[in-house]
Length: 327
Image (cartoon, rainbow, N blue to C red; front, side):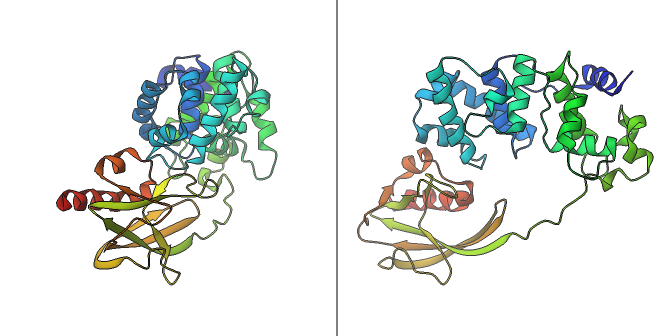
């Protein structure tokens, strides 16, 4: 048997039981693939099912307001994914049908080569690769690949009869056996075809590039209480965490956005790690007489309903407890 046949035989026996498997519905497959970007399958599963209960089809998603979509996405991070998902849903709903080829899927907001290949191969049977980190890792080890052009090699190897299963098999192999560290080569169905394994050093592939250092930021987070409510503001429509609600905050040493607020006491520190930066946060509880322009005085119900970055999870909890004491 060749590589694809061995891989698919293993997949038929060992494939993971995931809620988006066993369907050809392009909507459900598309939602799962967007959620799986930068997020582990185990974390996605419950959020996926909840999202589909709220937005059962693409027309429901297209009709929803952006705030509603962002709130449903809360906690999964990378909120540009949710905005692009919403924009793409509107385009699909306006067209009245889903794209069927990877090339056409890539024309939608937020859909790259990986997602386009996954949906086109699984939902529509197009023989295209779906190259995510798992596929790169597996194929680079099997081929002992050192340079560019892995995408072309991946395309050659896609099984023409079962392209969707083939892509999912590579994902499962990379997720469960051909892991970044300590790959379980003894259980790998294609170990005898793997050049990196036969050379005795599978962890040497993929060739690692030097990681860029994360930008470290020290921020002050203000919980400013006005008449039993806490001030929040909406972030700008573009840039990092665009359009989400936040507590007023600023980098240490820069101008305080609420100079009129009277400091009451210091709050606990918190840390949040983004892809390219780290926030080291120090909270301050403050009191303010009136609500400045551009701010909303939020009660506990508002804090539950508003879409806020998970970076402020600690301070949202503190704010809700404090509001309860004020009443």
